[in-house]
Image (tube, one colour):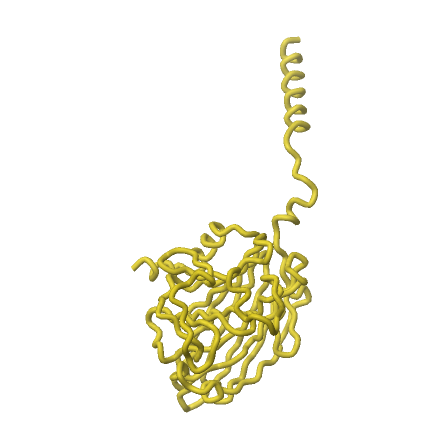
Length: 295
């Protein structure tokens, strides 16, 4: 009789735990996630999500492949012509493959994968020719007017700077607070930050900051400060704020000898405004950036 009473007691206790335990709210998983898909339209790589302002971010991918000696050169002398073809896009629109053929014969294959709050880039540049290639760096131009709450064209081209950031002296710095702010260059406005190990002669011909970024992460906040965008590539040639309400982490190829290949990786981060979480993800994905920053 006692064992039966004991059994009933524990059965009742288990029911209490079951019914009194907190139940996840419907849609909680949906709220915490940031689903992303990909699309291609002409030269645009389009990141899509119902959580993004206006539902998308557009990237001119790729805008240009560039020669060395670019800092003071005419832009038309810097760029090497190329064509980009869509090789494939998966049925779920989360994996895209592109191939760029540069006019000097270099072939660049891109695998782009969208997941929850991230877009990953795996890039391989190969020179199959018998002549050295001068392709030193390339730039994806990420348009962020809609994301930051400003028009994509016209008006004050610096209006979105308070929403944008880089890291200087190890601290997040909004671009509107960066001092000094370079203003002289072959083309203005804009701002370029050159990392250690890259020649200051080989970056975008916009105003070149005397400041050196702490690492390779650049990003911005949405207009309501609820969302966060950031991008990084490795190896990278420069961080750049341009005139199309755009931000760049432009990746480095370094020139290719005949038969030589170079692998590059990159990541776009999207999500709620949680800077600590972003930095942990960035450190996980680009440990060499953090290591170099602490030297």
